[in-house]
Length: 145
Image: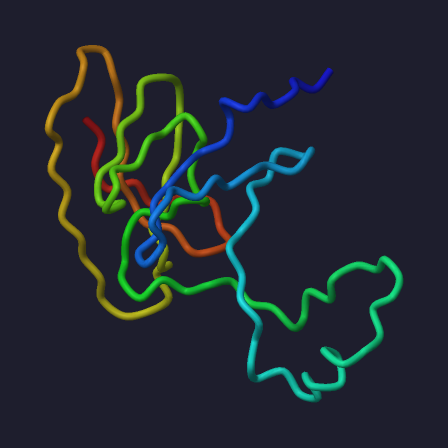
């Protein structure tokens, strides 16, 4: 039996330019929704927007794209809901179980690096750090404490 999500499973985060925090809700399969914008490069976009919408129909996904953040931070929606992000999304705090957080930008090619500072770690806890691609699972853990 699948466990139901509660309102505590919503995760709030702040986005630059928006005064109040935004909640990223889950759908019934447990996936978090993504912030999107209209894709201005879609061919014949004007025809799609002028179409009569007097009846209910699905929103065509091909005319939208995921909003790309201008700077690399921890992703507000590609992380476990148990993790809490700081307001600037550069720090993460977790207290229970195995949780994963990714950055807003994935590794694609070339040489990359990042710096990490552990401010505290309880005894008997475990931390892994590594690289991930945008649609892949986390892999190549480089450091284990």
